[in-house]
Length: 259
Image (cartoon, rainbow, N blue to C red):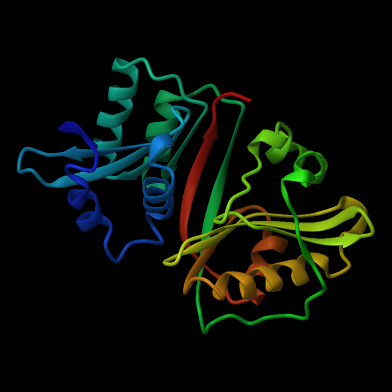
């Protein structure tokens, strides 16, 4: 199986493969379209010139795998051969045993649902007033995220927070204090609630429910299809998103190799 790099000279190969499967290939499409300077796409091609898998390398650190186990194995072998040192790798549940084989040592590992929602199917709950934060809030946002979820966001820095026309950050505030936050990522075709979190001192007060509904409303002003990720074991969050209209569509295994 051959590994080929996708660029602007052969991008139609990529777009033909993912057409109609945008929810499955969300990061592939969004990163390649909006941030090509940070994105490397690869395809695994068999002897009959058919695509058996697609793979994305983001900022030379983070990998996502899609396709057959044989294709994923070929790409991991390519990483080893090219001596590409990665921090995190995500695969489908079909890839779980393969990831165990190649990455037996890790910082942490978890299963993740990708939950999806199309405009018209939302079930919005009561909302609260929010404001859109700016780059001047970056340090405050990073500190909030580290406190809200030390395991998942414990290393989040201000420089990790995106501020551009594609990445609005919504927050419910109490004076200057962030109570609940949602970091969004928007394109005219798709969008995502990339981050959702509530101050531990203010949980179980309906803030997360309000923030999710406000985020859905905001996203659907710009795009017809949205998604959100949630750890499989976090059933309260799964139920919250289901109540808003989301449904689980894909399950992935995420392996964090370095902090």
